[in-house]
Length: 240
Image 1: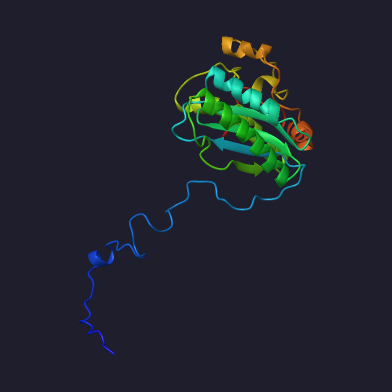
Image 2: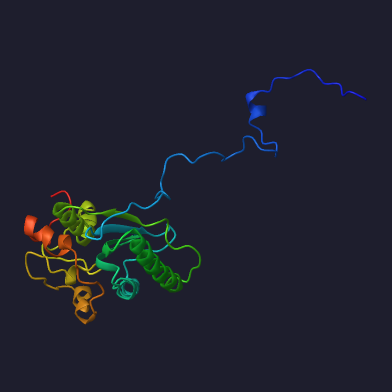
């Protein structure tokens, strides 16, 4: 039996140790990503059907802005088709550039997942066709937070329906005090402190659009928030 002669051990330098060898070990870009920029793929939190939810859908960076006339019709039609089931209902929405806010009711975690899947598929297919693109449309999983108190519910409704007003205020743009966002369900919302006035052509177009959202059924959305905290003002935004 011939024994191989082993050479004298040589200590590797740091540069040699970090050089890819093709057989495992260190390689550029390997390892766990730093930080967390996406919604965690964890088991969804279970919740009771009496709690509404604030849901956010964010599209991929390369998708153009969703705040355009024909894109709004796509959102309205998709919500009307997917958000009127007995187990899943879209009550409020707002289209904000690269994301969509929703206030929804669902009979439970499974109902929420099923309803959101149906809505996302409808939106992705129609938007990809509209923008003449292919591939994944949404950046990640939807983010959902259930609302347990009248105050949380009121704040979420205010956040969704007044989100564009808050964005424009941060940019230094001034809006009429009674302005409502035509790219939202604000026109059909019955919780405003004063009657809605449609001043702009884009707002007046809503008069010819069938209501895309469903009527609320849970106490927090029908009675709880306004009984405890009162109706909303048009110019009331988060932080006020």
